[in-house]
Length: 196
Image (cartoon, rainbow, N blue to C red):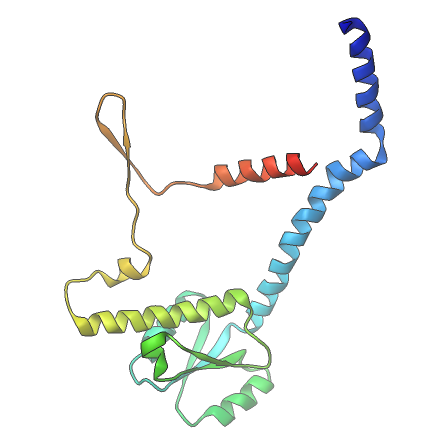
């Protein structure tokens, strides 16, 4: 039975491999899937470059420097502006000198609220960076006002995860943050195999 089965399997396999549909699904389908995921990120990055220069109007009187530091660390170029300069800032945005300007209202201290004014929206990643910078600056200010021996930098960075692995001898081995790269690549490969 096996002698007759092997030539049939070989013939079927070669017939499938030589078909145009097999070549399409093996080569072009993964390229298409990767393109669908990567192309929006490229456009997002290009629009983010245009909005990287911003002016900052601080109505709270206490958050301006903190927010500027965080935004500059995230890759923004920040210009401080005074309250009442909104008309001048609008003209600079329309002229393309600025990507937009931010207003930190009093609510920034309570809810981390920030107003963005520009010719177009900042995009998902840029908007997230702006919100995160303001929220972290407001939290830092609030924690400083509360006092105490708090390590603000560590808290605002998201804390740390220390992993201790138990060994068979009963001892423990310390390990750093887990690396999810291998697992992610394995999951993507498995997904592509199932898809094909």
